[in-house]
Image (tube, rainbow, N blue to C red):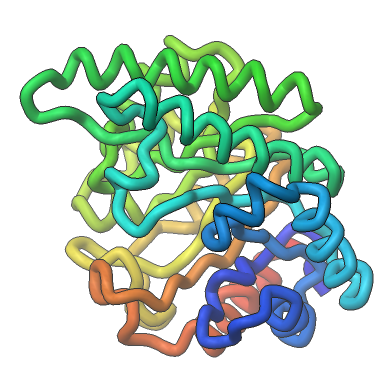
Length: 275
């Protein structure tokens, strides 16, 4: 069974109970599970210790280890963004982040992933400055709890392209990357532009994709994963590879069987010596 290949429990939203979703990941043959804090924000803020205890019980029951917690509160990129224009809303979102970071710390999880924010059409540089400020605060807060902060550079966000993400890493010391090549494949970004991101990566999301489609069956994959794996090995990458299929209406991601594709993707990585 895999010791570096993880699977997202949030790939199976039809199963209401998070503990049972974690059990599905174990049933598929994974030893690592990426855990999401996407819902029940009020409980998270009010009782992070209780949230951590609940997740911890499920992990102990199923014998799984968490390499990353993915925190996002909201349905849209604007709702999730750490850099809204309104200062009161920013303060509120810091509170949610702090609770999520506490959960990660209580569980002994090495890192957590968030989305970096959105641009403002009428003031892109203002949005960027706000993003840098918020990421800097979050890096310091997470590090004080022993948690590494990672962002996912994603389509539709303020760091949608590799060059934008690199600029953010340069301006926010200590910020790291959860690399998801599918977001660049969707936008037809050449892999040569993506590879310079690899030195910033400490975690990775993996799913099949092709230009114009962020999530496709493994048989239709057009991402050059052998080249990505070779580049990661050359930099001494020691992070996990999280198989992450997300059944959702956005980007037509609800058109495949996440269960079967998660298993197929795991088998491909195992077949290339990634365990």
